Length: 282
Ligand SMILES: *[C@@H]1O[C@H](CO)[C@@H](O)[C@H](O)[C@H]1NC(C)=O
Ligand SMILES: *[C@@H]1O[C@H](CO)[C@@H](O)[C@H](O)[C@H]1NC(C)=O
Ligand SMILES: *[C@@H]1O[C@H](CO)[C@@H](O)[C@H](O)[C@H]1NC(C)=O
Ligand SMILES: *[C@@H]1O[C@H](CO)[C@@H](O)[C@H](O)[C@H]1NC(C)=O
Ligand SMILES: *[C@@H]1O[C@H](CO)[C@@H](O)[C@H](O)[C@H]1NC(C)=O
Ligand SMILES: *[C@@H]1O[C@H](CO)[C@@H](O)[C@H](O)[C@H]1NC(C)=O
Ligand SMILES: *[C@@H]1O[C@H](CO)[C@@H](O)[C@H](O)[C@H]1NC(C)=O
Image (cartoon, rainbow, N blue to C red; front, side, top):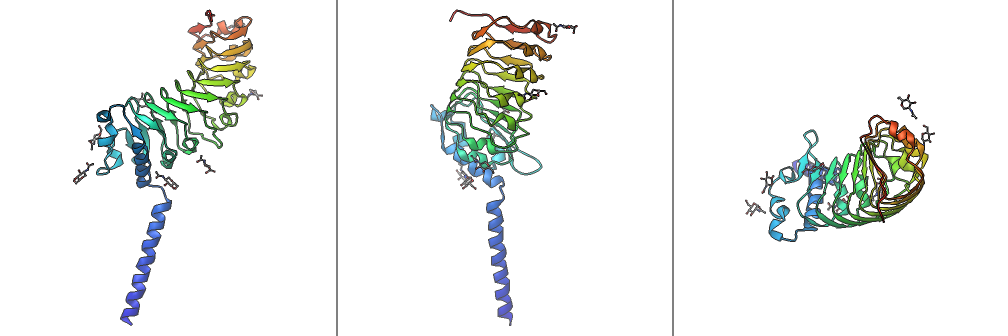
């Protein structure tokens, strides 16, 4: 009788243990974040290995929350920010970074990251800011296929990105405030969905290979403070609707193939401090 009871207890414990493992494996936790960061670390190098700070600092002997560039949230014990800007790092951004499902900010700017931007990065629904500026990333800007209402800042400035901007993307970013795509090799027109990002304050696309007209819908982006279209191949008339941008502070449309004058309404925008539209010899 006692033995039967003991067996039952053991069976119950084994069952609980198995269930615990099951829970561990399915609900992402700080261990999920650690393995994603380790995958990143193993793919990263530095031209001078002695200067690869992650090699020594990102030690599994301490919690990831003590790792340089890593910030954990106080409420749920998860990584909420990763900022490795200005560390001279090289390598690819792994798909598995998106396993960090509580990330709010990713900053990898001013490094030598190369390869494609994994589309899975834009699968982190908590993401507020993604700053990949000044790297060597190539390929297209990934599509964003479902709503990311938290995302406010995308910076891809100064990389080697190319292709058309994805059309089915900007209609999923209702709160995007800053879109910085300058100094890449993007081409073709600005997608019409871009003009549904009503919260945009900074739209910077200078020095790319964009063509086509700037549509009147630009006038819908009434929160715009900075509009940088310079050094592309935009053509046609500059739409009068630019005059509707009553918060505009800085306008740079120079070195394009625009025809006709700058609409006179533009000069009536009281917030405007700088207009740069001077044609340079090409
Ligand atoms: C990321 O998550 C996937 C799916 O759960 C898993 O298969 C993979 O091993 C994880 N990658 C890392 C580096 O943790
Ligand atoms: C890693 O860097 C952080 C921040 O500079 C520091 O607080 C921590 O002690 C370092 N850890 C190791 C193991 O070097
Ligand atoms: C981790 O801790 C162990 C024991 O304290 C030590 O021997 C080892 O060198 C440490 N490893 C790293 C990478 O700091
Ligand atoms: C990363 O840190 C730098 C300062 O070192 C800051 O300028 C930048 O905004 C941060 N990036 C993000 C995405 O928070
Ligand atoms: C992003 O998430 C959606 C929905 O969970 C999934 O269907 C899709 O495969 C994911 N894409 C990537 C690139 O991880
Ligand atoms: C611009 O705003 C007008 C009026 O609200 C709307 O009818 C139009 O669809 C908008 N255009 C775009 C591209 O969002
Ligand atoms: C310029 O602004 C003034 C004052 O807000 C307004 O009365 C006038 O109609 C505006 N003119 C144009 C051309 O927008």
